Amino acid sequence: MRLVLVHGINQQGKDPESLRRTWIEDLERGLDGGRDGGLDGDRGRPGALADVEVVMPFYGDLLFERSNAKAGGAIPQGDGGADDQALAAFLAEGLKEQADAEQISAAAIRNEQERLAAEAATLEVVEQGFPMSRHINAIVSVLEKISPARGDLAVRLLGQAHAYLKKPGVAQAVDALVRPALADGPAVLVTHSLGTVVTFKLLRELAQAGSPVQVPLYVTLGTPLTLSTVQRALGPSFATPDQVGSWINLRDPDDFISLNRDLSPPRFSAAIENIGDFENPGDDAHAIPGYLTHPRVAQAVADALGL
Image (cartoon, rainbow, N blue to C red; front, side, top):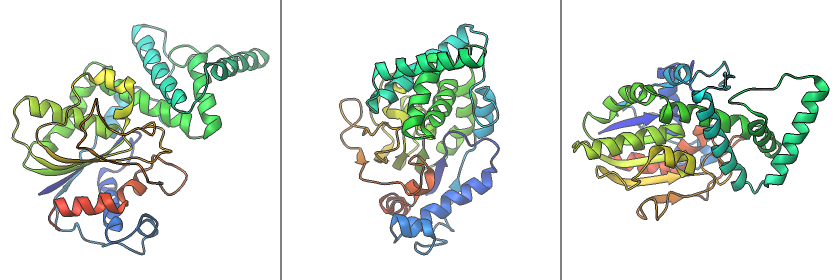
């Protein structure tokens, strides 16, 4: 049985083999230990996955380039053409959904937009064009007041999600890198962030094509599949793909990428095991190490692999 790991956003420039080893080590730290102990490195089962074939398709550089992001993951300014307006609409919708989840009022966003406009006038700042309009900047600014990383993380996620879901040829290029890892025999599948979207889409397509590929365990961590913006772009249906045995979904309530929502009916299957009573150690609730060292995730992976 193989173990397939699929990463999420903002992985450009990383060494794929180093990333693969880090994920393996984090899973091993989660075995026979708690989250804090595993992260501290003084518990767990080092080497537990040494005899397992572990595959990690890497699409970070490709997605970064195809999403036309700047260094650091920022969305570049465009000329206001149709592509830029589509990205702006996607960003605005996704950010507004996240602002609603944080109970940020339209008045608060409007006030922040007016403040930014007055500040720009005072400083003689050139008006920003698409896709980073003042309205989008205002939502990001308000989100950042709740947590400095939130606005930046949301823009990175939504920008790369838009590229994958909407830009011609991007999904095909990413899928071409990830699909072979799913098409070669049974595999336990552990995914994070945008990787949950990529793999769900691929599993759904493989099931529709009658592929015999089997996934005894599918793990989604910090998934944006909960965002209506992403769901509309993916389109129906959200039934569990036929080849998936069990599905575990883990989220930190403060990981606002998943909006503190379960993958639950009526859109998703009631059979999905949703775990939401989890506090990701450290300052970043979306960070992968805490997710991988969660004992339920690590042990479920080990059990599925027959360890």
